[in-house]
Length: 100
Image (tube, rainbow, N blue to C red; front, side):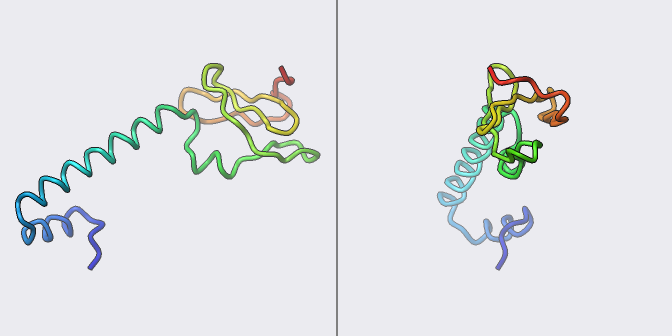
């Protein structure tokens, strides 16, 4: 049985002893807090960062995040790209900053 939906979890909770329901609620709260803290420690969503690469054809290497500077830095050529307050990187080649 799929328990991904809230309704599915509610139906299963009726069958669980109360102590197990309390543990489940505590675990879900911890998971939610960890997810929020990992998002706060990242400029760009992790799933997006995993598929992005340098826009220069001769490079195409992945990025590393520079949190303090709000930039993505290419691990190959070292060019840097600004990330806005919404987590959207500006990957226009003509606006890339030179390596530090």
